[in-house]
Image (cartoon, rainbow over all chains, first blue to last red; front, top):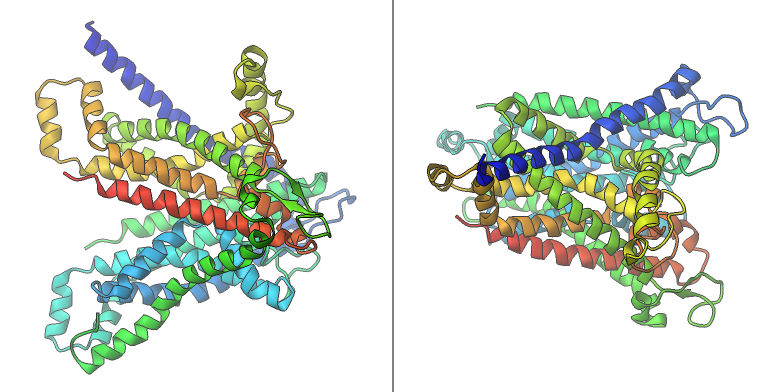
Amino acid sequence: MDTRRLKDKIFTITVIALSIVAIAPVFHIIIYVSYRGLPVIVESGLEFFTSIPNAVTDPKPGGIAQAIIGTLYLTATASIIAVPIATLAAVFSSEFPRSRLTHVVRAASRSLLEVATIIVGMLVFALLVLPTGRFTAVAGSVALAIVMIPYVYTYVELAMLSVPRTYVDAAYSLGMSRALVIYHKLRIMRRGVVRGLMIGVTKAMGETAPLLFTAFGARNVLFGGPLEPIDALPLMIFQFIQTGYDNWIKLAWGGAFILLISYLTLFIVTRVLVKEVKY
Amino acid sequence: MRPKGSRHDFIVFYSLAAPTSIVVLILLLMLATQLGLSLPVFGVQGLSTLTTTIWRPSYTPPPDGAWYGLLPAIWGTMTSAVIAVFLATILSLSLVVVIEEVASRRFREVFSTIVDLMAGMPTVIFGVWGLAFLGPTLEKWIMDPLHSHLSFIPLFSCEPLSGATVFTAGILLSVMIVPFMVAIIQESYRAIPMTLKEAAWSLGMTRYEYVKLNINMIKPAIASALLLGFGRASSETAAVTLVVGNSFNIGYCIFQPAYTISSLIANQFTEAQDFPYMMNALFAGGLTLLVIGIIVNSIGIIYLRRVRF
């Protein structure tokens, strides 16, 4: 074999090996988290989903219901705040592409995507926690909404821009007003809009850093209301895994398994949705 | 630009402009808060907040009692991000080559799906895996052997006391930023015109020669991926906090526990309210993160625009 061919062979084998190294962790993570998390859920049984964490001295770990409720509450309220703002902003920049505000909002959204999410937490802390003197679920919702906005904005804008020009021209030629055309564009691209929402929700659901100084975590009640601190799955995992208590570390693994399953489910649902967006 | 057209258009423009401005306002508020709340500490300690290594919370305000130097955290952020980007560049280039040139169409789909799956995974999951598995594994199989055989190299000179080190953080971050860098490199790779690719094949090049040529054409995109990857790695919080060890160390050895700016904030922010100026010092850390982010991301985007065919 001449040297060129040999070089080529070595190169091919190396890149394949390195690619496997790059993607192997994701499989190992899925297996490892299931291996550590599933036994905990089996041990706790139904209680895992219905009760709050037991005391560290208790023989059984108890449950993470407060974290599941918290994550559902926070992502739902964050979506309610983020989706209208992000969608309207996306409609604006797709409708008025040459406006100066469009350039500014695109740059702002790009920057928000890159900003460390802990800085989002610090911002909301300064705006809502410092003046009121308390950590609240509302602060957590706002922080997650800020995390979601750039994602929803990006995907909805993409969806709006992909509506064929001929459709829009046809709509105008029928004498439709601009507002009506926008409404119909959103309607035909609703799958794109839903996809943006899903990606935002997936992101918000898994965030830890923005909640540290806003939602703060509360583990003695299932749900304390919007003006009290609230727990969330990532927050509980992050804090419990660092404690030295067996019971709480177990709950962290159980929670990690639930979070992983929720993420995988949302990932698959989003995939299916995207596959069906066709013209 | 003022909207042209009917009165109706005018109403649509302004009713949409209001929510749009909120997005911009959030970013401005963020900059204003970080700047405003970090000014007090700069007022007392000056710029040495960024260049000193002592971190001494106290009820007596600085400079007499307390002192808040961010240098160890800045150093930890830089070191872990450099390790991450170094490894992730090699891994993501390999992945792009395999997805684009080696794998069959079916495997290509599989690889891309896995990369997407990694990209969105909650970071705390990487964190618990890093804490319980990656750290101890690296300590036993990589860090201990390197230290015992190559400890004359400054990088490996200190004994790893646990799995939680700058090195572990770097490795974990590299796993996390690979999908992000793959996306950037892949986009440019796909933009190489077919005619150029076909011309290269028609010269009878081997795959190695052909890929080398293509990679050379998208060098600016790779530089951009490097910078944007660095931005991602330096701003990661939850996963890093769990594996970096969280102690004030500075030095060339990568086997010691350290702080990054984000892990320092995550660990100390809640207690910071009790001590004068401590919270402001942490906001100064946040400001530093923001500034680093703005610089690397802007240069990264400039590089990306240089890819032209």
